[in-house]
Image 1 (cartoon, rainbow over the protein chains, first blue to last red):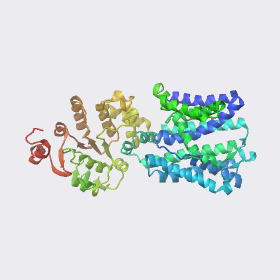
Image 2: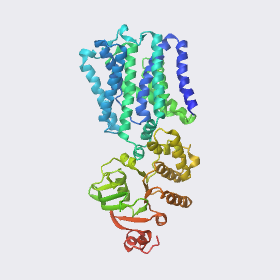
Image 3: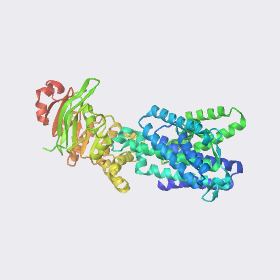
Image 4: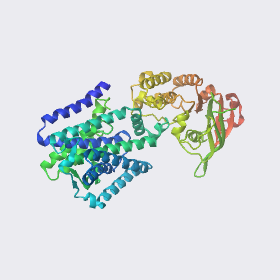
Amino acid sequence: MSARVFALHGGLIAVLLALHFLLPVYHHGNFARVMVLACYAIGYNVLFGYTGLLSLGHAMFFAAGMYGMGLPLHYLGIGAELAFLAGLASAALLALVVGLLALRTVGVAFMIVTLMFSEAVYLTILLAGRWTRGDEGLVLARPERVFLGLDLSNPDIRYLVALGLFALCLVGTLWLVRQPSGRVLIAIRENEERAQLLGYDIFRHKLAAVVISGTISGAAGAAYGLMFGYVGASFAEVQYSIFPLLWVLLGGAGTIIGPFFGVLFMFYLIDLSSGLTSAYMLIAGVALVLLTLFAPQGLAGELRRRWVRWLP
Amino acid sequence: MSALLSTRALSKSFAGLRAVHEVDFDLAPGEIRALIGPNGAGKTTFVSMLIGRIAPTSGTIEFDGRDITRLPAHARVALGMAYTFQITSVFARLDVAENVALAARRRLGRDRAAVARETEAALERVGLGQYGAALAGDLSYGHQRLLEVAMGLAQRPRLLILDEPTQGLADSEIAGFNALIRDLAAETTILLIEHNMDVVMELADRITVLNFGEVLAEGTPAEIHASAAVQTAYLGTGADA
């Protein structure tokens, strides 16, 4: 079983590495973006897919990572490495505070509370426009985007760094959900009261899930800002809270590889349909409805249900 | 007498309705105690307070000499109490072995070999040895009840609270269940909430009868069977169990 799991996930990383040499320039750039966004989806999936908590405010963690990285990098010149860590720390701290407050609620109330917190973060970014430059955002200069000696404005390097981060998130969450504490998260998703009566501290596990999920999302935000050289308030808007939900639903909630395929599918769905018509969201919408009707568990979820029951 | 579990004046009211009223209850270590009473007598409310699923309105609960009245449920389980649900509450979409492993893992942690051993032993003991790989939700109702018991066993509790464990079991399964409980009594104290009077009379060392949220009678099966008050309230006048 472990060998199959290892082969599947290692295989995905290997294919993505091979694509680095094979993809034409346009798709090469797309895939780099998809891999970073997949990290965001993976982070979201820890909370939604594995713990069963639906957040409508994950953009705040993505933005906390992005601004936590971008502001000190731009204004204090602390270097990309330290700035990245600052982004991680910002997202982790925000997740801890939001988790402590929002986890006092459940279900729909949890969705609304996270949505409200995220709006508060978005408005804060706009209000602090003197430093964040609001909607206009900050453009990070090329020399600022050198990470451990790697120039992230170079497309080849960017692709490989995105792959590295993606592999880290993929393997990290795979490890997490096979740990005893990761199994408890799944147990909470499946039957919270039963899990508590097996002696597990539900609040502590949920809080840990929020912090891990928020931190991974923040890592994706910080990396996105560094790689594409732009830090903007649009990433804190509500649509960036909805995207990871859609990606994870499409790819398969509670699967490790699902989030990547969800992002990939939706990225190219919008890309292809916008080439056909300006009403591209209509085509994207129809595709989403069809997928929800015929594969309600998402691409990887459906795969698991029908053929590959061992899929983690 | 040093009771493993005791309650003093334990009460619960729901919007003025007295579900459980000033119950004093002592459970000796190693005992099999049955808790019986007509529907609505407050049995499930009472044990829900014991395990911490609901908070009492007043009164205290002590486990092993320690006041646990304000402890959350998971902390009580960590002290050695285990509870199996009246309405089957397994992790339906996880496989049978994982259900039991979750129960064993809190105690055994990262030791995968020990968790696997404990899981296998618990499943063998309730007779579900060959179902480890099946999804818990695909098991028959009776087997899900047994899985609940296996999850209780894997926790190696000092007190095992079984809430109507034989409900929905076939007669043949009940015989096996009785043997299992007698076997378990050597290792743990058992509190059994049960409707099936044959099971109660066969297993229990002592019986507590609840009626309208109060203790109506307490004694050995023979004493309870002979009690006129119990006959009237519960067994039906003149009925032979």
